[in-house]
Image (cartoon, rainbow, N blue to C red):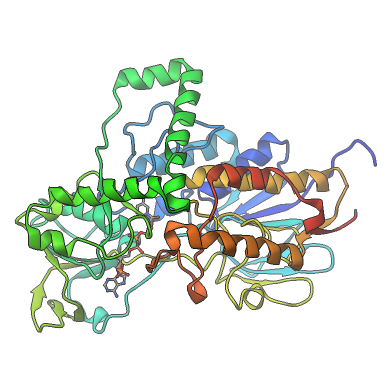
Length: 485
Ligand code: NAP
């Protein structure tokens, strides 16, 4: 083998947080032969799509950022969505990733031919790539509720991820369906702005109301002036968030303490009837814990009504509940969540043996160590099955997954391999370990949520963030089927 490194042609699908992360790390590794396909006209992914009032990250910004491109100037502990969107755009531009993005280019097919992946886009053009990386996001496809009459509503009606900024809200009667992380943030912002806010709750969520202080100019200066201090706070927040792992992963004192802390939050609801309505019947943290700076304050306001009676249908002038009551409204907001199990679908993908990804995943999505799929060589997934590590930062998860992908790509560059895919046996063994670990976790204590996928399988990582990093930092040769260069 000569000392000259080969130049891999890499297709990255999606210019959101994960795609930008990988592009930046490829450039740092001296690889500029990649294309990021982005169907929209901007970067940002979920932070571009979600512009609803009150949007903020529920993970502290000092840790919800790339470790290699930290922003000293975050304005709040948990920054607003627009600021996070601007951060990712800035990183894309500063690193040169932006120049490698093909905007308004939707990938429709990915097919394995003898020696490469052929990527087809909506305009019918094709390109060959040695590697395909899915960075399509986990909460990308809005889930619309299956409620009769939804399309008969006379006023503005929209999903939280498709916010209609032309719809007037101030002083209007707004109906909101859904009280998850998104709904709680919208309620916090609209209460007091809308003339009347009617919240339709099917299932109560556990909510942690915590402050979200602004950072001072001095704080920003400190972080800018002393990068080591900035790095220290990144790791400080990381360790703080990781300290919750024991409560999430196994029964015991830590979980009992967390349960007590979360349950006592409800004490701030003064009206016992309202408190009762807001009390979930499942274990705290089984669903993703809702973090809000003002939910309990907002829901207790006189101009906010919580309706827990089921929805019968939507009518032109409002929402009719099963008790026959019509709740009139001018605007209808659907904070009804996402299909978190689509991954790169609906993109059609066919492997070398003619089997599609949909066929490979007929019993539910599976990926070896969350990243690779048996039978699909040189294909990597960001935020693949079992990627979420509780309320952890998805940015840190993406960085760990990027490291694993880069390890293989570096081997390809050195001419050591031509293709790599995990073996069926290694993937099955991996899932045996996942399935053995899951029952102890809080997510398996009996609740429904977007964490739960096909057949009731919990698609969350059942070990610690440290375990996640360690798992992806090593490449188990024996677990992979490789072909030589
Ligand atoms: P979600 O947690 O899935 O909540 C959807 C809500 O809509 C639930 O309350 C659900 O009720 C309700 N719903 C769905 N269909 C309904 C129907 N037909 N009738 C009545 N209610 C219905 O979705 P989300 O709030 O958009 O949050 C999803 C995830 O996005 C979060 O868990 C979080 O990971 C992420 N997120 C993060 C942030 C952040 O700050 N980083 C902010 C927002 C979201 P049921 O519970 O009864 O199904």
